[in-house]
Amino acid sequence: MSAVARPPEGGTMAAEPRVARVGDVALNAPDEVLDDAELRQRACTELLRQAAMRAGLLARDDAIPERGATSAAASAAIEALLDRALVVPEPAEDACRRFHAANPARFASGEQVHARHVLFAVTPGVDVAALRRRAEACLVDLRARGADEADRFGAAATTLSNCPSGAHGGDLGWLEAGDCAPEFAREIFGRPEVGVLPRLVHSRHGLHIVEVLERRGRQVPPYESVAPAVAQVLRRQSWATALRQYLQLLAGTARIEGVALEAVAAPLVQ
Image (cartoon, rainbow, N blue to C red; front, side, top):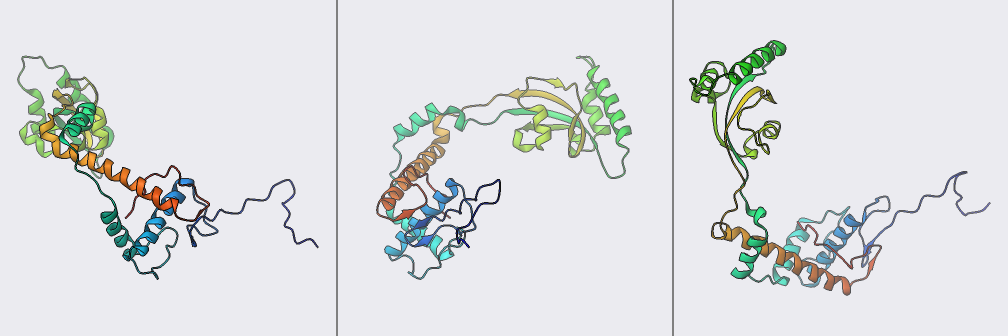
């Protein structure tokens, strides 16, 4: 009988899983199939772990990572190695100013909306159909008000709203998208509407009648007010560049199998 394995009829044999290595250390188990990005990340971390050993920052008998998980000692040693090996210069002010001018949206503050609402809360046991009819009737009434009439919206919020803002005529103040439930924010941000919205806004809290009083567009702050944030972005970019160069240097002197690191991206080292 032949000892050569044969494929099943009508099919082909599955390829054996690829086992990648850095030196003598396997990056994945034989039964573990990883994509190229995950293999590269593990290879980068292993290159750094072995460099930490050579630098005397990590014991030679440190546990070999299992399915990509390094020991706590290895993680600390890698951080110490990078602090020692990577030289990241402070960004010059002219470079920071150029980056700010070229990337205004990156530092812009978000859109703001000054709104108020009347909330018809959906609570356990409530008749949702009846609640919707009440909300829709109130919406029709508020949209029909004249411009010179008394503040009927504020009065409705005071008497009908299930939100604490009802004590202030339903006023929610100036909001950014992150201040609201996502489903509420989707209905009021990124739109030109001002005034009482022509639809009920549904959220996890219930049914809202919303009036947009005013909108503010995204504002690009002056460089001086965001200078520390700009400098931090450039420091991170310089650090990532230095890390890529250091990894390429380590890869050039290591025996690597089963994974290509020519165009390695900076891994997340934790």
